[in-house]
Image (cartoon, rainbow, N blue to C red; front, side, top):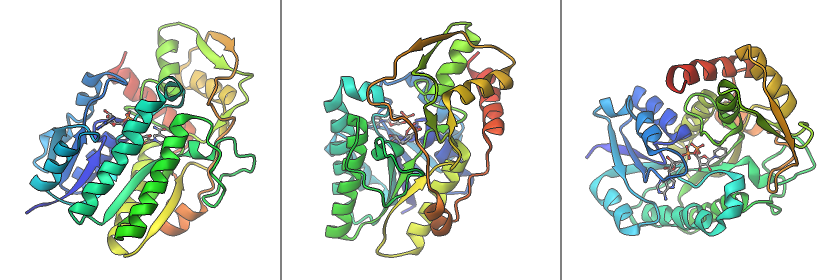
Length: 322
Ligand SMILES: NC(=O)c1ccc[n+]([C@@H]2O[C@H](COP(=O)([O-])OP(=O)(O)OC[C@H]3O[C@@H](n4cnc5c(N)ncnc54)[C@H](O)[C@@H]3O)[C@@H](O)[C@H]2O)c1
């Protein structure tokens, strides 16, 4: 039987970029995704258009909340590792529908872990988030910092996921790397995220909403660097036994909202119209990754500057969205 990596949420932004890279490296992939309505289903199907040309790729439309269809996936295919990206993402909408976030991000993650235990699959990468750090005062954020103070249901659901992966590591010896992603951007980025949203409004000549005084900052990390970090983590997992690690994947180079706006204007040659509005509940003031552990443990070095990353985003945006 062919050995597959199961990528949950493989039609999404990070998932589809990862799947393309795995296929390029000749790794058979099962992509499980329910094409949820957080954003356009058509966009998600476009994301996997290239992968679908390969015999190494299998797409299964299914929901991680549905245990019986999840079981069929594990029965019908030989899964050797799982990269679990499926989730309801986004901080602000999680405040509106917290129980949905917990159903998918916590119960869904528990279902994946139960299947892994049942079918003796021992290698898991879990997609966590910088949001678990809440409004950590100490910067940069280090993996050993206390993350018991989330300020959104989304952040709490990701922290809960980390607790579950530890539980199953401890009980059943599932090897785990939790990756805490820091604001990822690049081609196929989710439309609700700042850079994508800003390009859309800029090209439509509509005003953007500028939260607070624009001094909040984010450690924007380019998608190719994130994909490289995920694949290095998978290699590490496959080559080592009995591991449970949590690793930041960030850029270690935060920029403020004002600086981001300035950089986008320079990249596009256009000028934003701005509406100033108060800071939103649940949003953290800053994110800033300490990436020493990623560097020493999985040899991770982010290579894409914000200037280059925005140019690549612009190329993709103009080709596919305008
Ligand atoms: N993009 C970021 O900046 C960022 C930062 C930190 C963490 N993350 C995490 O990384 C992962 C991927 O994020 P993304 O930005 O690619 O989001 P995305 O929304 O583009 O991708 C998530 C995918 O999961 C699928 N999905 C949702 N609910 C599902 C369910 N019940 N069953 C099966 N599939 C389901 C969606 O259809 C989507 O294709 C998520 O777990 C997210 O929380 C992302």
